[in-house]
Image (tube, rainbow, N blue to C red; front, side, top):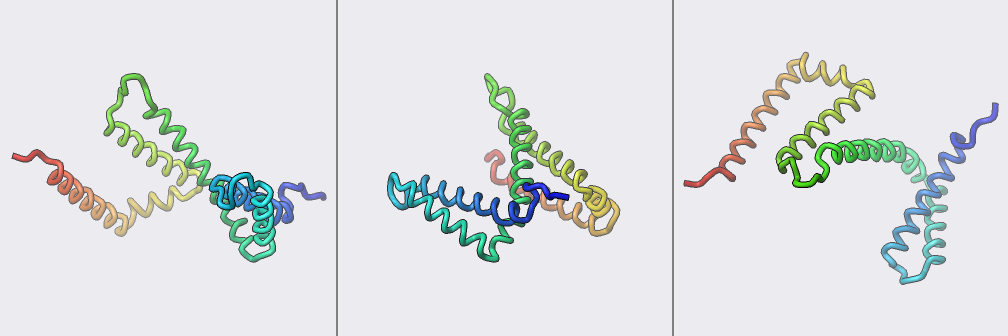
Length: 162
């Protein structure tokens, strides 16, 4: 059976990392104008050389292994930003106050973390750890203690002065 080109080792381990590094180096050199203005050919040659060095070195494996994490993190960040924009986006008259935006953002972040735990299958482990072990009880007690101390510090710093 013929292997599709998009999942072949050549494509994943050599071509895609080369294109990524070449594009990044070229874009950085163009944006910073490190070598001067209108030096597109020189910037392209430097990007080409650095890309070729990458695929010829063992560091190539690092880039290949980091890219799935980058893709997943970018999607998670995109989903959070999109939902956060829906919840606390700009409206005429700014209906929500600053603190409500913080509360809604925190609730959204917690919900997103919970969904990710459920999707990845880690929800049962985390739930059992937090609610069915003595270590989980210690985490809750220490977390409550930290919240009380932080509340006391905020009350002292921002409370009314007589």
